[in-house]
Amino acid sequence: SEEDKIFHLLASLGSEYEDLRSHILMNPELPSFASVCTTIQREEVRRKVMNVDIKSSVSEARAFVTNHKSSGDRVYKGKRPDLKCLHCNNIGHLIDRCWILHPELKP
Image (tube, rainbow, N blue to C red):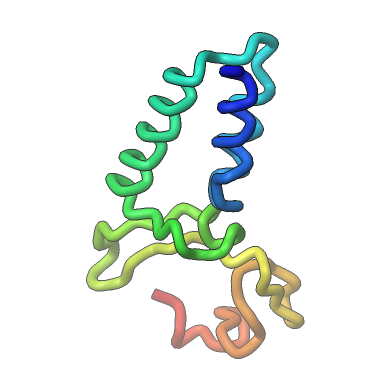
């Protein structure tokens, strides 16, 4: 049945499509197989346009990454939720990069 094809297709997607899979399945009415295919194709195009590396881990894929330059030659990649400074307790850096302890590192 068409419903079986949809579930088989969604189950075959990698973990990087978990959010999209959940979004499709949350609808009260299951969309058509053609609509699901179109949604997946649009997501692939969006990822290419946004330069999202689909081979990256889930935590990295959820972080906003851009290739546009900002503030000179630095590229902003967003905070690293997996890093926590033991000095100031802020998230996004470790003690060796803490601006409070190392003001010379501040941009």
